[in-house]
Length: 124
Image (cartoon, rainbow, N blue to C red; front, side, top):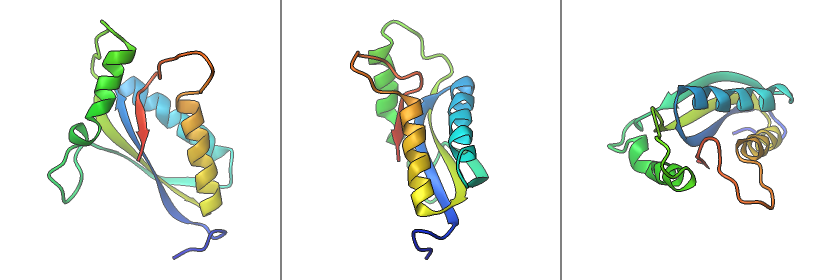
């Protein structure tokens, strides 16, 4: 197992309620966060079912669809679906944590005013 300062493959996992456009936007956020640091993406996967399990991403992330409905009343969810984005990054643990924090901040910037996330998400 790699120590904190050593580079190793690490996985950033994000549960999302997104359509193709939303998924592309989140991918751009991840690429920007990774590109700003000494890290590199080696693989990206969009998961709809969990290998070795009967659970689907719809089972696990169903609350994100509910979040969409609450935050966007009367608005159609369109082609959005619950998925998990897995981005495999080679970097140190410290860098991975920094990337993860940067992506989470970019997904839904917090402020003092109530707001709705563009893409409902959950860090897995």
